[in-house]
Length: 220
Image (cartoon, rainbow, N blue to C red):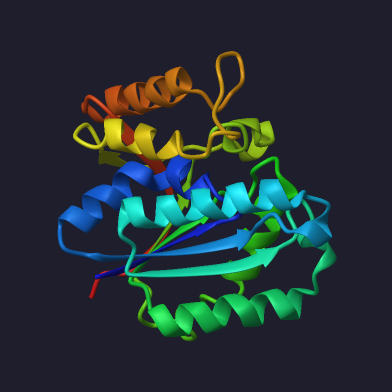
């Protein structure tokens, strides 16, 4: 099975589906990563910071051993500036190349506008008759974004994946993003990641779980 995770920013793939991706990889599936935004000098980031971030991405890519990596390098916190048609075309090109059977997306009501724009753009090009290869679409739970969704559209997971054997490696990979993980009460911290995995695990009677919201599932 081909599996594609779409991360609005580097680290979203790990926070939202890191353990599941590792588990799927060990089960023999091919995993692919599409990262949408990135730091670049023209976006106001220093050359040193850009170099550091690109090194982090390279190390994360190697840690998962992805079968393919795509990096759009669009402007962080600037997705609303792009034309919808341009975004749909770019996402469609990757989808058609990978032809994923399982797709991981950010939740459509995350507080970060980049997450919402990306969800809407991708969802508009995965209608069943346009992407018949796609069988399952899952939205990820991303600490500091999904948990701030508007109450009426809060994240209510209905799919749970046991990542008890992968929580340590997930955290190790997350630590590669040195500027994105910090000490409590900063939301993206090791304690919070473990706590969320334990809480979701208790719901599904696992030691540790990642939780997802099922958008679509097609059974032949």
